[in-house]
Amino acid sequence: QVQLVESGGGLVQAGGSLRLSCAASVSTYTVGWFRQAPGKERVFVAAISSRGGYRNYADSVKGRFTISREDAKNTVYLQMSSLKPEDTAVYYCAAKYQTSTTPTGYLYWGQGTQVTVST
Image (cartoon, rainbow, N blue to C red; front, side, top):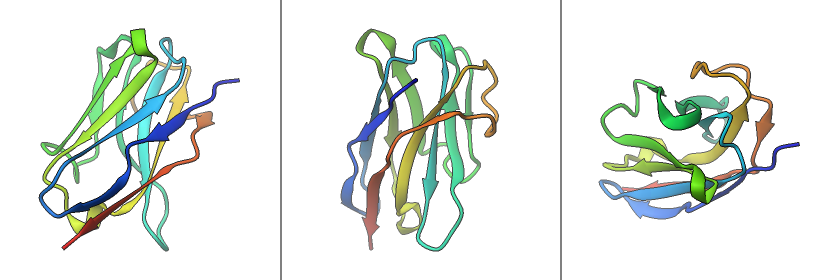
């Protein structure tokens, strides 16, 4: 059983930055970030393969968000810059035992961390 714990969420003004962390022993897993805004479905944000060789981003965050991992610290990061009010959501990290960075197939999920971007 893989346990994932997100942290780093909070309130930030539009144009600001935040870095989310996902703590988990997942060095052999692909890890993804997803988000769910109020009243909407959970959607894919970004993913990184084991060893960091492949990365995938949703079009809505390309050029603004960067996913990375530091397996020695059992942590995957989501650096978010140029934040917009529409980025407001609960952000979840998830893991799957596949090398593909597609948005499907994730088996293990964290509890989420709230990100709120004000105008």
